[in-house]
Length: 263
Ligand code: CIR
Image 1: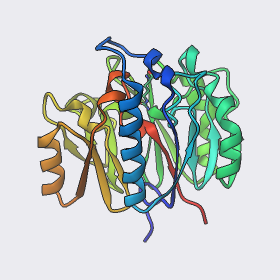
Image 2: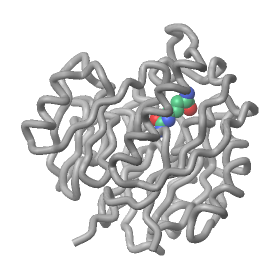
Image 3: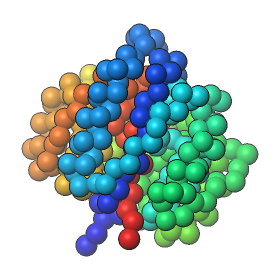
Image 4: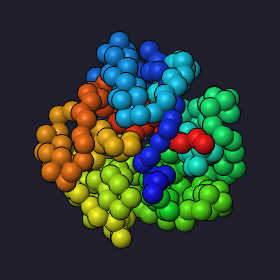
């Protein structure tokens, strides 16, 4: 049985721009260092390749400081890219900037036509459901306009509420397998994951919840030993990556790739 929620043949990434120093963030802990970010990004791309993906890396786009977080302007279902409408004003143009590359790399490209907003970071896919968390970046208008596009791919859309202090729905959750998620207690308590098993992160390791399952690997951010242990104990093959620079601008592992399958 294949699992379209975590078995991927391909991934698309974008190299971090040096302008990432201007990236959005909720709290300032200092600017990321572009050179260190580039090195961490290289390791991230290698980890996706180790997990079995063919990875294309788009050139940095200096016009958009947050463009390394390529997950937010698009959603890929069944190899078809849906160009989204990012909810941060400085990121809105990332959708148009990304479209030509999506046309090159994906089976097809369609646009989410809406006056609303949807960020890819608010979307968690199981094999048959698209969980969409409303947030400061994703609103109900965008969600309802997205509904027919995901239903066309055989998914049902569930519109949920991300707790207000959380940037994106997937900032604090990730899919581990077809029926299991990793989530912070705060997001788990929101009731979003009915019918799914939940492995919770411990206090102080909230950032571990933005992990990615890619084929047989679960990739987790460095510095969260208890999360890594919990996942290993549950039988997952855990790989750890340093995401220190992405974290300075509120990014994590899922944000830095579009993972998909072709053929
Ligand atoms: C932003 O605030 O949009 C970026 N600095 C971080 C985006 C992280 N993306 C994600 O969680 N999917």
